Image (tube, rainbow, N blue to C red; front, side, top):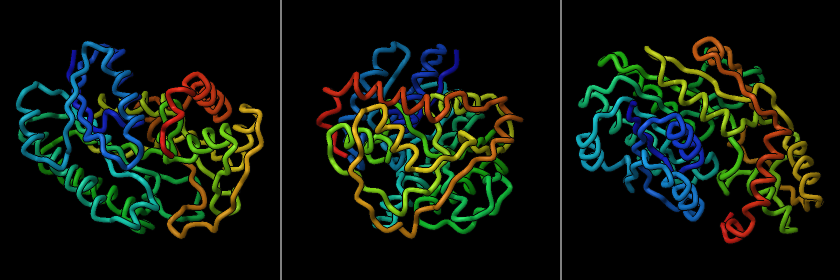
Length: 323
């Protein structure tokens, strides 16, 4: 069975992708620097879940450390790389663009150099729907122009995509780029809206909503995302795909779903819309259907129900997670 190298393995999508690979019998070498961009306690909880598998090997390491990366690659016969390590967050990138350059661009180049040096044929780079910028043209198509990012985060991910194409062209590396659309679910990021809303509404604390609450997001369940990501390992060439639910909903609709499931009314503090926020996202998933036969299985209603149930079952573990 193949060995897959997964960066960001203690992250939200990284955890879900590793778990799926491990359940399928792959050997997974996971690395993560366990940084404190959001509360590391939830990363440790995810890692505990993965370490139950005998076929999981973990290194606390940073993709910015090229020499350390090369040493890890040298120690194994690796069949494919899934790069899920990233500095994420649109608003945070406006405050600290340098961190996004180092992790998302330099880190990706370091991995591509390792893939080239050790003749690894398959590379998957996680990208983001944020590269599409703010456009009224819906849904977002892979063929759309993506050269007007609204913040350093999408600018860094677009740069990483371009470096990937260069390495594909020069060295024949099969390079697949999924652009993820607002991923949520169990073990989700505590800095993102779904986790924050569930925890704060449950605790009777006010939630902050930027804009009028009518902004639309193509919320996509994490297990659907993990399935699609693993399928990328089967592809050849250079391909970009959108991974989204193909059904955008208003933020206030999601808040109402959470209220109903928890049985409490949200106390909303309204704030002006941030200039780097996109008003709506909607994924055209034509390429995902064509190349990997993928379409999402979990509706927003079902996904929120699963996530709220997970939160209730793990309330004691999660009560000290900072958001």
